[in-house]
Length: 125
Image (cartoon, rainbow, N blue to C red; front, side, top):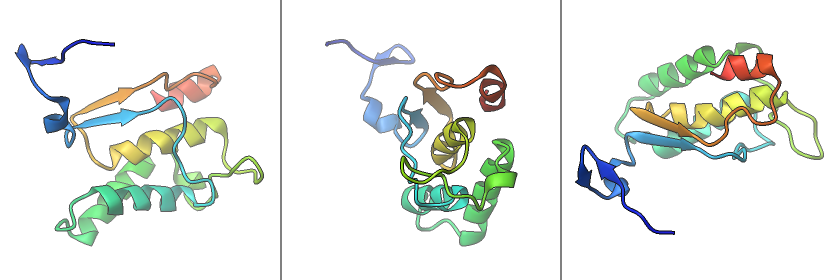
């Protein structure tokens, strides 16, 4: 596969924009043995600047939980194949939340609603 990426009409490396672009893959990348909140905190701690005060990180994680409607399941395990957890729609929203904690200017989602019913899809979008 070949091609080029043009940003504002210029041939630029996408790597120089990785801090402002988020990507949510088709397959979920959440940790099933962590709670919803723990997953988001893990992403925030790994990906946000170490210089960002903890209070600001708390606000970001809280805002993502609220925006994605995950308040009711924030302390629930995401779940694995062996251990039941949150619903598929909630799992997709947590997956999106992992990127939203970075507060990207552009978020690219690969088939975010596949496998979801219409009401779960509506909550995600």
